[in-house]
Image 1: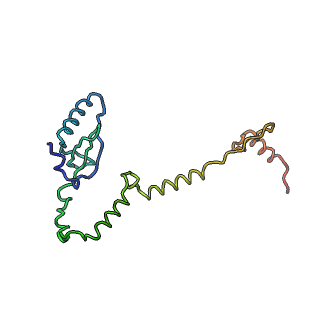
Image 2: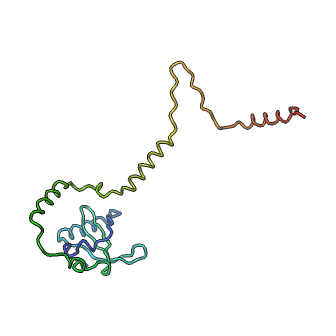
Length: 176
């Protein structure tokens, strides 16, 4: 089923997923459907199963792809009138309006995904980076010209040397 895009209010949209063709055979059909929906300002409404649950979905053309939106069920979207019925229809205070408009203009910025970044995750990534830097081994100073480089101490043990030392220790007369 297809519906006009402006007929589906944003409040019904739940989770977006990007769709794109996965092989050259499907690319032509994908492009034709996407472009036809975009030209008519239409979206596709369908159903599919995601995580063992049947969901209503909306397919919306976007750029070179299609965004699949899962839609909320009817009982998940409340009638806004119920919540806003107590709000007065009176016009805003004429003296306050210019002040608030000035504040809005002063605080206006171009949209950036950084505006909705997760501060907890950002802090966690900073902590992880700091730990990684602490765990890095300090680099050894390079020997100056004419000096021999000392071999790095090793935890590797020569088994033959260890056996010889052990046998020699056994053969030595001990204190009595």
